[in-house]
Length: 315
Image (cartoon, rainbow, N blue to C red; front, top):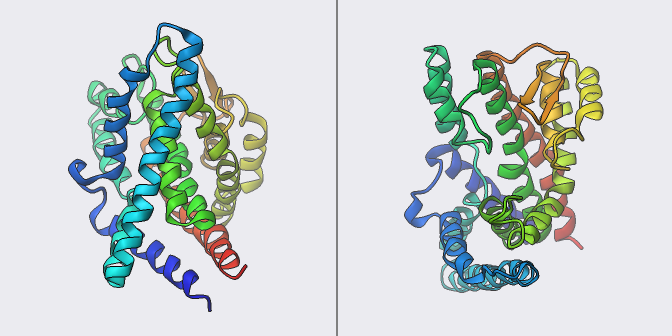
């Protein structure tokens, strides 16, 4: 068996073990936090009163960060590999773990569920506001549950399957590059007045990079639905019907799939309703959404990531 395949498989497995045991690293040593702070530092320097110039700057800032971060990680890991192979494997696993998040969802969701159970809607709105990009001040209990489930569905792609997909194809640099692109989108890829010009390229690249993983993830979610003995055919109907309702060409796929699997309506007020004829979600549906997330991630790694890593290692 190809040695590079075994190495990548070991790094991948160790990264998930680290996530399971420890969750997210402290902000002080978290590479994604470093990315975000560096982007925040550069943004004012690339802003311009000239909209055309700012759009060009939006491309330049993106490539500048890539030229700084990706080669740096590659060079550092290459040096470590030559000095101590075991330390390299552990370091590579730590870097890979920083590109995805699974356990941290429990940190976000558990307090939210507690607030919902206690009928503390004000606290629930506040907590869900930390994981969704919408105004949560007027959300009902059902809409808070919906927002949480939508975030979990999106998190399958952004948080795990996309970086895993690019790890399978391009190795550690691929996963790290995706996380940098996704961090750019979360920092400046907005349509508001402040970011519409400087963030347009970041938003486009994030959309492009998530395009295939989002669709493969939705398909994998249907397989998870089948394994859990739920109505996958109904889920597929909702997916195919409602996937294009959100403004994002990617997020609608996992969210519509989740709505169909749970048989609940997922709503962003004044924007879209997925599964509009279905019941409102409950606390139990949030728990089930997490279960679907975990099973989908496992299946995605098993079906797409490991075989792709192996095939590319023997070419």
